[in-house]
Length: 191
Figure 1 (cartoon, rainbow, N blue to C red):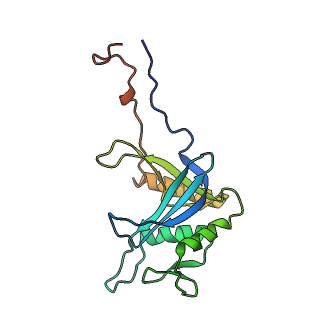
Figure 2 (cartoon, rainbow, N blue to C red):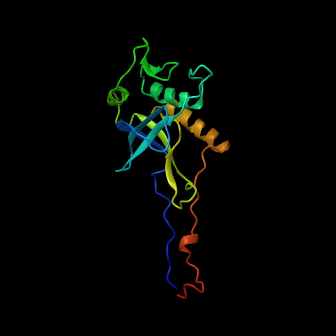
Figure 3 (cartoon, helix red, strand yellow):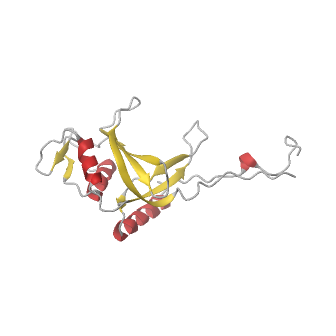
């Protein structure tokens, strides 16, 4: 009886990986209107392909329209702090430096910070295969919502964060089955 192999597991592309930013761009969206929508093109150690890490979201705002503490604001400061940048967002949600000067071209500022790296892969990320979106049957490759420095403390912090996110159902990994490529003989496959 012929043997048909199952599908691959994705090799070593998934899991905790050293990485670096190779480019930064602002992204226009036609389906929703985020307050910030930036994509970091990431090179992953051991891969010849890059992967986009998206920093996009909408701020929580109070009744006067000022931004409040929220998960999206935490994501912003994660990448800003990881890259040792002296910038942030003000109460209006605008990019500013620590002297409250407005930043007009955030892509240039992030690109300059990424170029200051002192090692080949200065960042550390977690990539995983997520279940397909509704209506689709192809799994997605996603980043965990935090990128850290590729140093012992950064790696440890990211590993703890991913463990917490998995335990609380925020990171759901896709488990591939062999149902599409069964090696068992059936009436439909009489060989």
